[in-house]
Length: 212
Image (cartoon, rainbow, N blue to C red; front, side, top):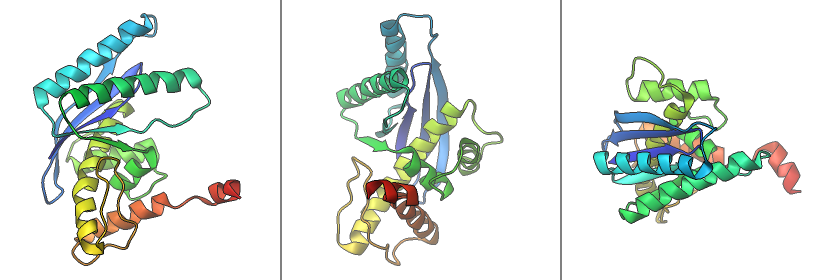
């Protein structure tokens, strides 16, 4: 499976492409960061990013596209720019009839490190290890884009396996998996990841208190 991961951002938009085999071995295909200067007109910056994403899709022809799910932040202008870039990426993928996966930062961290609260250095280190790279991809936007692509590729086949084992279905489009415990059909590596991913979905103590 070839997956194109996008870490959306207006100043720096990370784009990472990986090939992942059925045994979960991931290989780097390409990684870059599309940059736009803050002094440019907003619409011109969006056009630059759009053109860059379109080129990546046409040149590398991924089977799926993975995006970071936009979440609320106190910096409204940053969130709006990120959301606009996400919309551009989604439109480019839909035009090519490519499935789109949306993943939260916690889900991505859990997938590549086994810990949903990992920091950027830990994510970058694991991305380099998974892809057998000599150095961590820089800047962090590049490593994050690759982590998104790896996360989506690993979650997609695992969702199918979990569905078979538990008799329930997984939503690959949105990245959701069955919450049941995986059966012995999963490999040991998949079982470890599955447990970490499920733990990351559990609300943290402060979140439970807020819900009350």
